[in-house]
Length: 548
Image 1 (cartoon, rainbow, N blue to C red):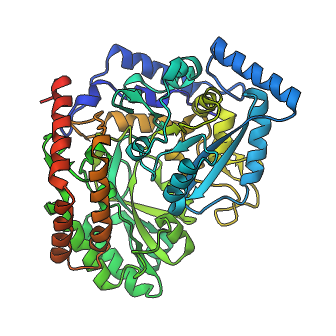
Image 2: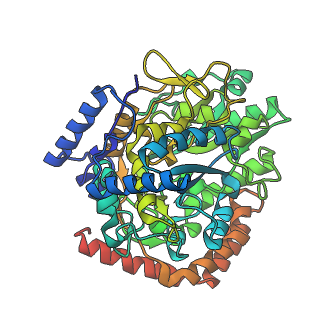
């Protein structure tokens, strides 16, 4: 039987949204208690049927009936395309999964629904091309593509236009708190809905293949455990591990490095969704500062430079855009960096195709844009907004659709264990699986479907608690910035960073010189003016919300 966790992440608190001090604990309100009660009830109740648990409005039901009647006449079902990415490209079993998905959605929505899965390395460019050229994309994830960029480029539909969200997305409104939806508003307009996920993160995890640690005889048990139950390491510990790995396996690269040191290696708050003006002390200050001139960035640049000089990194790092987990899965790399959370060991082991040890080197943190980092959006040019919004709604409420999207088909891609968790189907593993996207954190609502073997059935509740109890929350939590008036400045800054930043981040240039060149380019591109505009918008928001 499937354990349904219908509203597990609704219990994150409104009060927590404005708590700024490390170690602060949110006080549960009556609304929170009610939400928690719903969570516990949902967690304790076994699913008695497949499909959506949201009540459809009369308009929604009529729209479905009309589409089914039209399909019966024409013999063809209208199609809605959902685009997102994974780390290894289009799954071999995608056509099979789409066939099963369409068979189901023809009955439930009067539509053919097609998943379009693109390799992460190509997703941003491919989506821009498809969205600007008119190729059919109806619902898409803004991860990699960028939420603000998608809005500024005119890709996104106003979800509340003509009252459509109220009429056709009642399920989303039940599953996602109103303040979380409001956090996705830009200029007062709701352009996207957030995935139900870990909005808090443990800022830095270094993940190393267990087989390689065994090879160097490293005893993980000598390290203390973090609050999440992972080995708690320092950078000195990691450097010692890397040194031993390099000596033992000189034919492999030690680390699959990516340009994510600020996102996955620090508690810097990327105000407005970019790092051109940040909060360096986000739990205590609303002062916008230049992170690239900070000691935080200098420390990272030096660390990467030392790793590169030691031979730990691939000399193709600047041009090889393959995802880090895919590189580790290939067997040519032994370690990578990421953010972690409850249940992350299972996730990253699946992505890397091998048992991974997760070393916790960071702290828990919730940034201003943690909720609105990469909402799901509807294409402005979708042919039938009503049909598309009904599909978006189903992604949050329908367990059958979400199971196919997250895990594929039972008996072919996965099987259900006696305890209600799932694992690979007989004869299937990480290397030959035909459908295993393993981007649950990207999915609209993975908590209406199964959890993977090794994770607790109450994983959704643990994620909710992690969000609620996050030690450090940004004072700007919930702030969004419409940078459309500064789109050209942003483009100039992005071009300047792309020219000089990666070589610093990947350790290919001596830090002092590399940072100086980057700073000069950013200043010439208008960094100071861009930061001043951010500060003005943030100050106005803080005043409006009574935040000092």
